Length: 114
Image (cartoon, rainbow, N blue to C red):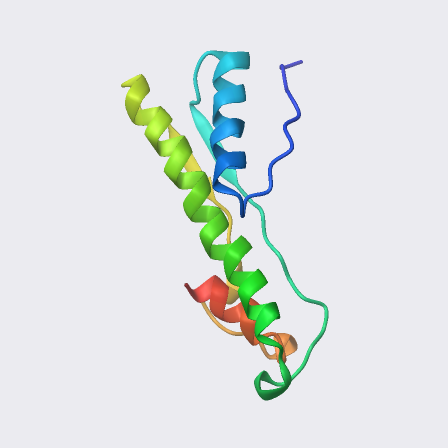
């Protein structure tokens, strides 16, 4: 058995990410590994010309900027610790090649290519 803590974090909110790293350091003394896995996918499949820009905005906020916020704070902490660490950013196969079964999900697909 290892040790774990629960921390509420909205990856879209930069300060939430900063607090997540701070609480991890308080609980464990350092951050040696990070797994960035948050993602959002709209279940509403529509052609791009019918897709509300709010869907694209949400996809980019979580799938792109959420990763940026996570990296910003966890990498800063790792550098300050002076011993490095490991960061894993989980994405999607869609980030490599658009898939036919995801037609109508242009916001998600493009955010995974970003």
